Image (tube, rainbow, N blue to C red; front, side, top):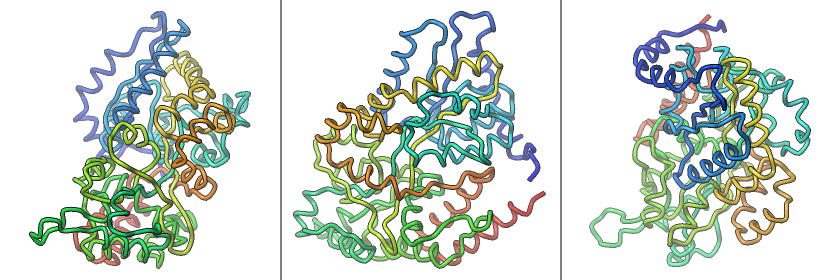
Length: 426
């Protein structure tokens, strides 16, 4: 496909004037000392944001040449228009925190600096967990580094399981369906459940896609076949029909639109299970509720989807890009990885941090994390392609329509037709 600016990107540019003016105001002149670099991120929940800000403050305090200004610019679906506006307008941040699925789009726009030369010379590159390398690489070139890693699991409330007489955790889809029905309770007798078995994410955004992909991979399915998206497969149909079955059973509470990552219903006991990951651990520890986690129950195989965000160096000026590399080294240091993991529940991306005495002690106090560490070897990465955002949007629409009552096969066929038109564009 040819690299070009689409009509919708021009619209985003027109709507983003105020953002661009702000970005211009934040861009220091070449003579400024120290050199201040902006980093855009969408770190959530807020306690994790606090941990990151503390680490950035440590970096800034320990040297005088480079200072990082970390700016929260919203969740990923809110960030994307801002990112594209800044790129098209020529005033991007210096560093960007985002999911690796944006890599292909940023490469196509010529927006990010390749990191192959720096990575090859980086002394500790052999310490990276092999599971994270795939999300750094596109067309045999390194484009980003992982800030941390994680994967998706199924959190549950042990006290609610015990009260319902459930003694064995579900391992299969059918067992999960039965457990979800058992946990759905109408406590006041008004004919409406006061507690549902499981929360599913309503919306067409990436979070909805992310949480559903664990079920697709559990069926042995994939999104890409021979370089092209293929959604109307037996595996995808089965995975979407399973979600439809949960809804039909009355076992599902749907999240607020595009807010399926929030834990409010889980913490309040309005749902007994929720798909999320170890990044929520700090928030859970600060609550007064019981919690635990299990692997996503399997269909044909035990599977999960790899999560975590990458740090990209945006194309700005050579001296700014070079300065940004100093922060990358800090992020990949065992010190950063350990402090971030201990503060948030994310998994370290270096084997040396994972094996360190301090992290092993932390792990011993939080055996819940072994669920996610054990899943790393079999975690599936989402595709890294230039049009992933549009693929995700089409798939997200199909999932959303199904949760609202549409036929899963029809929803996937409609999504496939939309995707085919995109892939056929010159």
